[in-house]
Length: 310
Image (cartoon, one colour):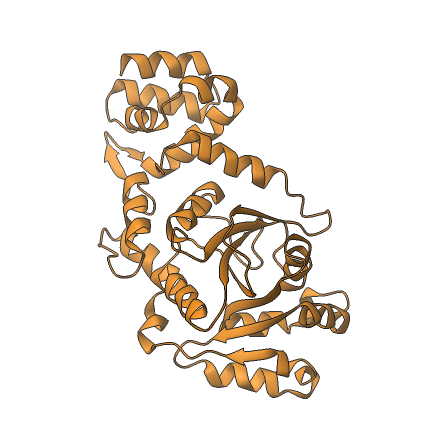
């Protein structure tokens, strides 16, 4: 799978466009693994996916789960929509989920209770558990997210259970939340899964910071994800030419929008990699493409001509 494959990126956008957060919760599997026995859902913003996500999935497989599904919500609760565009988050997850017993899905809803409903429709005969970090425990039991907290939690825990993988210093915090009187009715549906202390340091925030500083994130992300991030220029420092900032990843995202609006031509003849290279170049040709994109004047015929000339 190529990081610049328009057919894959367009299929991701089409799937995302078909999910309406205002409708009943719905989940779509992009790369589905066998649903044998218990299934673990690993929701996240994956901005980007890290080695911790993969290690948690592998640990769940060793614990007896027949399948681990990485789940990206169309709108992630309490997360800003910045960094990797959703299409690329799904692309990077598909690189991670190439291992046996792993898959990728996208959900219209970000609340776990809604995800449980959507998963029950997609996998009606499969027992589901959510793999979560300890920071998610407080959110799940926070009544501010639900019009009727008790009904929502009853529904969530009747359909699924939680497997909590706490950071080194957060295990007791999760246990304290579960021990509160208002949460004891559901505590038996929550298990703690200890992980190696080193996993605590493998956060998406740390990876983004290293890449923005120009450092190598080897060991913090799966190797295929590291290759993908480098290939598309995600989180990398911008270059400057004659006072103009050139952000290769932002240009990629903008070109994808333009090509989506000219999808008929793009699917036949567009070369996203070549167009990003041209639009990121410091010369006059690159400046003109960037101006066209910024002013909303980029047309399919202009891009086709540039691609042919380049």
